[in-house]
Structure formats: structure tokens, C-alpha cells
Length: 380
Length: 260
View 1: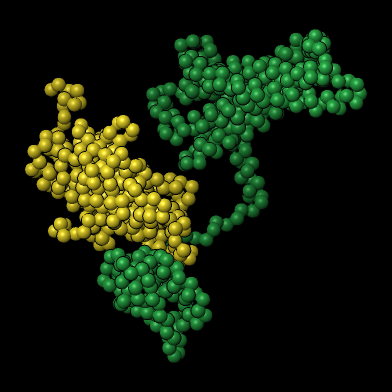
View 2: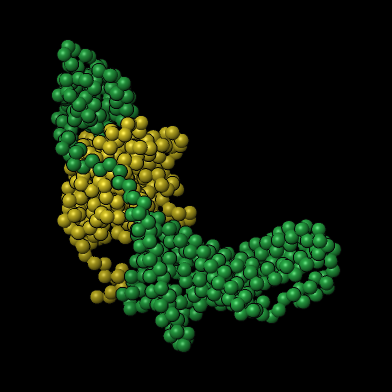
């Protein structure tokens, strides 16, 4: 297969009597020329009906793997199914390579056509089975975390406080700028949009009451949790997922260390401590955003403050805080669970991260709904 | 015998490093057409870095790398793309794309870089896989293959476009002796039958004796080539103590901190 300076291929196809044809190849049969030759042969209608094809490769100066593939394709009769094909004149080295892959090889090694489609009941069945297995894993994980949480909380030495501090900084302190921006903007937007409607009833001042209740009871904790899920839940999943792929979790287990106690518990502790703080912060800035709109509408700060204090009860703030704690547990636990569930392969960590964020947000909204019903029933 | 063969890669006065940190300097050598050329050196001597410079992933601080008459260091645009297609690389871990099958991995360069019709691409890829002994694993995913099979598949993929030069990074690292010997056999067969030039980075003594036509040896301390020649010749005649220790597997007790 020595390189040939000449890069051209001359292809001469002569048709003889009674379905005979002779193909003479002269020059260089590389991938480019093989593609051109293929097209020419495909477009020639008489090729498919040939009974005898003789390929003369005596003058072939260069032939690479793609060129050999063309010769094989011809000799296997894949282009002219009824023809007996002979290839002659290949130089010994090429001949040996050519013989190294036969029609039998092609038939056995060729991948089978696309996998069959599953029926709808089959798909549904496997989906439900998957969901049930997932639920079981979540319950097991919850049990395992609870079992590990109690000894860690009762024995300070079992907790890796530096790790808790690190997570607290990464997921909490570093999230302050984005939480500030999003909360203040959401406060501003809601107040601004509702002020226009309330103005029709001469009730613009109630913008402050509304934004106070919405932010303290609902949106503050919700915004903090959603941002935490996007920023840190995903990071937990990616971090633990990468550790799993790199066999770091196996290494921990062979030391007799439980990854749940060693990695998961610290993250949950950090998240439980920081989510209420972030929720309070998001609430405060959201309310500030709304108050700014009210101030811009011409109401004095004293009136705005009075409206807020007369609307909000201490229980509202406690309500928001308790949500923050629960959301913190959800985001951190789901992030860690998805990380630990990471499978093998390059896309596994990406899948875990996506699942962590999606599951967290769904569970946060579901928990929020449960909270609303609960607090309504408790008349808080 | 090898002296009569034409030079295919010529490295001249190469200086390699990261910023201020120079790892290798005064590196000059020639690789001849159709030979198995081995780059040797202890851990951390810069073997893989040298390889990454030779395949154009890193740019050397100084020097020239001539491959088939083109200087890789200065080549740009189409010249560089054409040059990169003249060689194939099989990485240490195989670097197969995990989301597609082994056959699709081998087909990928054909799909992207040649105008071939589908059936010819499939035939070419299957023939390459059969050549490295992996025909029956065509439909498997890379994660289903053993370490040795992954390296074979990586060689098949590197050969998809019929390059004249193949670069292999640590082909026998992490393989059992039998698999490693199989791979050595594959390398020598490909070199002798098809005239493919191999540049292999390794420190497996057993495979060096089997595959290498010529070796160069890098030294971590000085960052230069300390020895060049045929492996048996270096083992028996080299005066350099480090080369002697390397080829005779003798420990460097002081370096290991053992004061025996």
C-alpha cells in the first residue's frame, strides 16, 4: 500500500455480449475515488443485471481500505446480485488483505438492523417498574440517611465540620449575589404588575400587603430553594457522580466508611442550616423590591412599614422558615441520591445532574402544596 | 537494514514545556518509514508530553516537527488539517466515544471525513475491526469491552482512514501479559505487512524487545535524550547508569529513599 503521487483514477467499464462486463481500474483507488466510482456504478442500470463481471486491478497503483471495500462490495455481488465476479491482478499484499475479509465475515459481523420497537403497554410496564424501583431506592436512601444522621448529630466527632463549612460557603455564601438579584427583581415585577390592576380600585397601597404575604409565606423560600436546586443540588449530584465514576466511593467503602455518613450527611446538615437563612434573605430582598415600587408610586416609607407590620404575623415568618428547612432537606438529599445513583459512561454524570434538578424542583413544589394545605388546616 | 528507509518524521531541536517550566530540550530524532519507533523513559520524564506535541495537541516552545515534509508546528489551516489526517492516534485509555457502538466509533472518521457511501463505510469499518480481532464485538458498546479490547478498538479507529503513521500512547499499560503480547503481535504485523510506521510511548520492557526497531530514551533529570538505538544494544552496551538500570530492572535505592 505504498503511497502514490498520482491521485487520479481512471475507470473503464466495458459491456460485452450476454451480460458480461469488464471493469478496468487504473491509478489510485482511495476513499475519494472509491466514492466517485461507486456513484458511477450505481447510476449505470446495466450493472444490476450483469451475469459476469471481471474487475481488472493490474494497473492499480494505490488502494486503501476504502478502495478494498469497493472491490469487496463488487466481489460479494452486492451491486450485481446475479453476476459471478472475479477480481484479478491485485498485487500480492493487497490480495492477502482482500482475502482477509470475506462475504461470510460480512454476513456474520454485520450489525443487525435497528432494534425492534416496544409496544405501548410494554413501554408503560417498564416505565412503572422503573418508577417503583426508583421509589424504593428513595425510601431506602431516606432510611439510610436517618440512620446515619442520629449518631452524627449526637457525636460531634463523627461529623466532618470542615466539610460542612465548605459546603455552607459554596452553596450558601457564594449564592448570595444570584439570590439577591433574582429576589429583588421578582419582588419588583410582581409589585409593578399588580399595582396597575389595584390602581383601578384605588387600592394601590395594598401592593405592600400583598407582596409581604406572597414573599414571606411562598415565594421567598421557594425562590431560595429553586436557586439552591439549580446551583447546589446539581453540584452535589455531579460531585458524587464523578466520585462514583472514579471509584472513589468504592475506595471509601473498602475503608469501612459509609458514603452516606461520610459525604451525604454533611451536605444535608449544611443545606438544612443554610436554606432558611437564604429563604429569609430572599424574602427580605423580595419585600424590599415591592416596597421600592410602592415608594416610587408615592407612598412614604412609614406607611409602607406600617402596612407590612399590620399584615404579617410572626407565624407567617415561622411558616416561611419551616418551609426553608424542608426544602433544604429535599434539595440536598435528592442531589446526593442522584449522585450516588450515577451509572457508568460519559453521559452518566450529566444525566444524574439533570435528574437531581428536575426531581428537586418537582418535590419542592409538591411539598409547598402540602404545606399550604397543612397550614390552612391548622388555621395559621 | 533500516538505514535505507526514507525518513517520515523528523524532529529537530524540540523544546517542550509549560510556560517557564521546561520539560524536554534539545530533542532531535528521525523516524523512518515502516519502523516501530519507541519513546522510552521513566515516570514523569515527559514521554506523553512529547507525543502530544508530535500529534499537534500541544505547541512546543521551540523547534520543528516535520511529518512527511510538512512542519506541524507552523502548519495552519488546510495544510494542518491535511497533515493531521495523515496519522492516527490511539490513546492510553482507548478514548472510545462511550455513547456509540464500537463499529460506530470506527465509522466515525469515515462518516465525517470521506464522501464514501454508507455500505462502503460499513465494509471498511468491519474490515478494520476484523483486522484487530474484534469483528464479533462490532455491535458492543465500549464499556462492554475489556481493557485490551478497548485498545484494539482504538487502534482500529485510528486506522480507519488508512494513515501511514500510528501513534500509540502506552498500549500495553494495565494489560495482562497475554493480552499485551497479542497487542505486540498486532503492532508488528501491521508494521511489517502494511508498512505502517508506529511511534509508541511505553515503559513495558517485555514489549519493547518484541516490537521496537529503534528506541530513544528520555531522562527526567536533564530533560534530554540519553540513549538512542536498538533495545538489545542499549541493554548490553549503554554506559549510562540510568539506562543500564532501566533495561536491567535494577532499583534506584537512593531515589526511592531507601538507604540500603
